Amino acid sequence: MKWRCPQCGKPHERNDPPCDNCGHHRFERAVVPQATAEDDREQFVWACADCGRHHQRNNPPCSRCGGTTFEKKPLAYDDFETGDTPGYFELAGRVEAAAALVVVALVAVGALGFLGVIDIPGLTPQGPPSVEAVPGNETAVGDLSMAEVETSVFAELNVDRTPRLERSGDLDSMATYVNQRLVKNAYTDDDREITRNQLRRFDVRCSGTISVEQEWTMTAVADGTDAETTARRLLEQLGPTPDSVERVGIDAHAGPDDRVFVTVAYCQAADS
Image 1 (tube, rainbow, N blue to C red):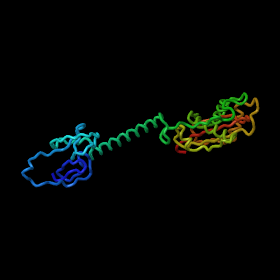
Image 2 (cartoon, helix red, strand yellow; image 1 turned 90 degrees about the vertical axis):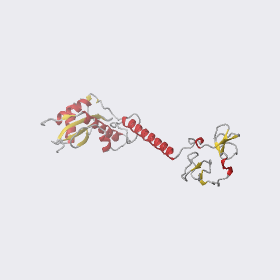
Image 3 (cartoon, rainbow, N blue to C red; image 1 turned 180 degrees about the vertical axis):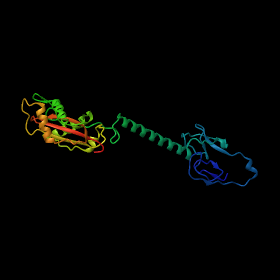
């Protein structure tokens, strides 16, 4: 043996650290005495009587268990324990396993976020935005039903129009959000901008351009005013609808002062 580990004393044929017994990163040249008549004597190590750990010298306590009694045993290279300290490849395997666990955890978190089980900003799919505590009344003002106003606006949009416009539920939802947001902006200090990113969160199928317009009656709607009259008054302010429009969404909302706000969302054809 030409090389030995200075940490645990294990001999090695080559200077190729780390030690496969204790993992030490440096070897020292072993002193190989010249053969003599006495060289037939048996080589030995000192083993801890409690745990069996081999030591080069009889210098308790044991580095593994703290035992104070060492026993002299013949040296047999098969006795050296190689499992106490991991070698390079074992450590590399553990690092790869840890990295794999991290990847699996990230994939699992990403899947849960995409499914909406947990909320991850930028990953969890977000539904359409909404407006809380909108001033006024979304149902009626006096005897005037907002649903009837919406129906009358849709009918007026289709006057003398061929082919007729279609009313779309997804565009209705977009028109409702825009209308309620603008009503709240008008009557409260909670003035917020409507962004394109917010409108993209509505599941609107449109091959061309989407546009949204809002108008409102300049004064309170008087008692007894019918839906048709209110619709015509609002459409006069909105102006003509382009021929390229194929589908619309409509929302009507009454403000706290009995003015009526109407928003129309338009979907135009792709080639327009």
